[in-house]
Length: 68
Image (cartoon, rainbow, N blue to C red; front, side, top):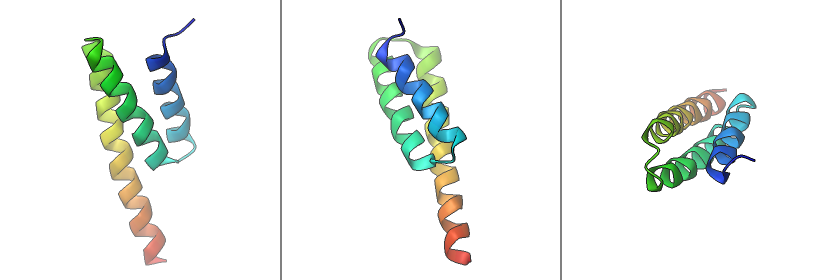
């Protein structure tokens, strides 16, 4: 059985693969906060990095959409 934080991270990964970047960033941010509270710094850092990447990818997607 996996902890809820790990499940949130995996759901964020799934959303990222489906190019749902805004949703992925939200799940990564939630997982990061929960993992930081548990002092699991390696996983929290990874989730934080992917949250940032998701936000940047979302901005690029919005720009491309409006340029069309």
